[in-house]
Length: 287
Image (cartoon, rainbow, N blue to C red; front, top):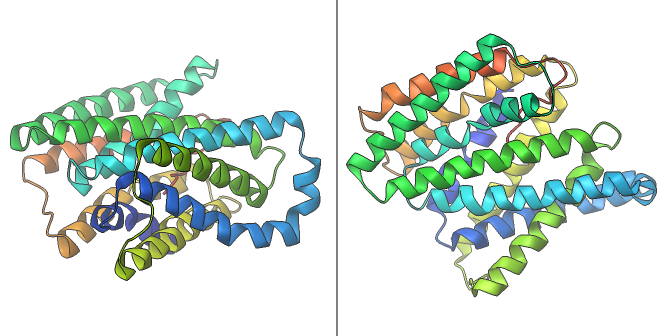
C-alpha cells in the first residue's frame, strides 16, 4: 500500500508540471497504458477477451467513456487551481459512490450521511477560500468536482465488469476506450498531440508507469487480501501526499486558510469510507 500510495500521489503534481495541453496529457497516459497492458493481455487473457459477453463489453466500454470524462475534467483542473485543492476535491469520489449506491437501492448507514454532509460542507469552504485567493481557481475546483463524479461513475461501472472479468482484460478495454475518446476530442478541438520536448515525453511515461499502472495495479492486488475499507482509508492519504510533492517540487504551498477545510474534507471522507456498505465497490482512484 505504501508503494501504491506513493505512485498515485505523484499524479497531480506530475500532470501540473507537464508542459503540454491537458487533454493531450490525458490521452497519452491512457495510450501508453494500453501499449503496456496489451502484450500481457494477448498472452494471458486472449481467450477471455474473445469470450466476453455483450453485457460485459458494454459495461467495459461505458467505463472507458467515463474514465475519459474523468481525465478530461480532472487534468485541466490542475491548470486553474492548486494541486492540493484539485486532489482533495477529486477525492470526493467515495461520496458520489455512496450516493449512487443509495440511488441503486443499497442501504447507506446514518454515519455515512454524516460524513457526506461534512465532506460537502468542506468542499464549499475550500472552494470559497480558493476563490478569495484567486477567482479563476473556482473553475478548477468545479472541474475537479466533476472529475470526482465521473470517477465514481467509472468505479461503479468497473465494479459491474470485474464481477466476471479479470482486471487485465477490463483495464485493456477501458484504457483503450478512454484513449480513443480522448484522441477524438483532441483531434476535434485541434489540440497538439506531438512536438513536445524530451522532458515532457519522459514525464508522460513516468505518469503512466507510476500513477496509472503501478498505483492502480497495486491497489487492485492489495484488495485480494486487505479489507476494502482499509485500502480506501489509506488512499485518502493521497491528498497530503500530493500536496507535499507539489510544495517541494512545484513551490505550491497551500494557504493556511485552506488547510482546515482540507482536513475537514478528509474527516468527512474517512467517515464515508468507513461506513461503506459491504456490497458496494470500494472507490479505487483512476490515477
